[in-house]
Image 1 (cartoon, rainbow, N blue to C red):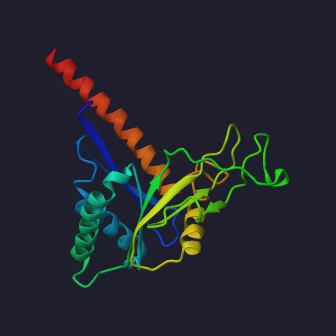
Image 2: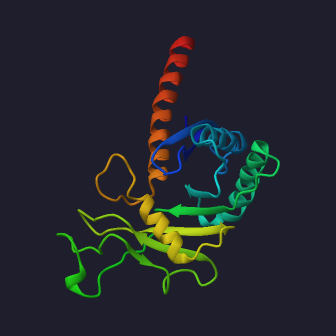
Length: 224
């Protein structure tokens, strides 16, 4: 189990991002990029087409689990896979793609300048607080968004790195889209700290881990 990694892709199946489908595969742990990406994206595109009878006009990818040192490699490999999957659906299908890395593990914390602006018992920054100047990179397109209500402890905003953007979204547009996606998670009546597809991908990974452990147990029981 220590040598195995699970890669999962979640994508919406309707014009409004409320219904999602998932793909999951097993691969070697040393690989960060998703090795079966082309087939998985093609399946998600076909599912979207069957549900809506049309191809998506644009694709926005929220990618979790990538460190900054892997940005270039993963972006290059996965953009190639996504574009190839689109061309498999139709030879003239080249939708604009926006590729965003979601980074949860960092040390940045934010506090309200004025006490009256803080919310909750923990006196956290209010949900929807966004920072795209000052502490962000001067050389790249990134921003911090605290989309959830901090109930206990200090809220940790999520950092978003926009590595590719064919649609030429403004920072405000992407922040609005991302914040809106944080309100669509079906298991919570409030906004959550990550866009819903990222949370669903975590749930898919948890389910796959259970199936994999069960399978390994059966195999070991057979051979021992």
